[in-house]
Length: 245
Image (cartoon, rainbow, N blue to C red; front, side):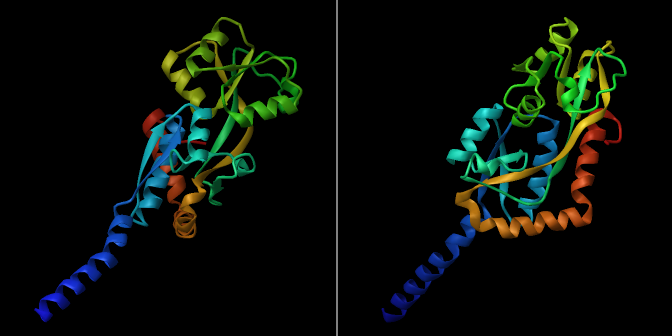
């Protein structure tokens, strides 16, 4: 009987020790974002990084503002990607310091080669932007642009350009390329060069702060390997058949 009691005790102790590690190994985190080619890139980068520390991830598609509310309140585990400095407005979110991709902020419109010299040169124009994109909203406001229209979808933006309800739109390069691919040859063109190019970062809700050092280490390793750039290149080539800028 005594041996059976000892065996039962040891079995219980082993179970208590191993359960937390098993739970961690099968852990799954959910991240919010709009669904786009950029989110495909970010998800693939993060799926690989989290996979290196034995954590599965899932994308929960949300509109931009709802996405931020969900990640900040802990409804989901974090934000797939956003611009730097988001934690100032949303203190429950912690930014990982390694950029997971870059974004070109582009002008799309009917105008031909126009000497746009920066954000301030857009002030006289009627401008369409995607609703909820804080970067573009802040930049146009700071530049003194007063005729800015926040529009619900990229398709609506394109239609407003076609019908001359706005002069230009400001979108990411990838969003512009998708619209041009979808609607075919028109007089609406992508206008080079980019207004601005900026990195974007992954954010975790602060309840997951313990995994940040290890995840950061894996992202830094992927950056050194050139893996992050490789993932971006592969997805853009698959989507558009061209080498990304």
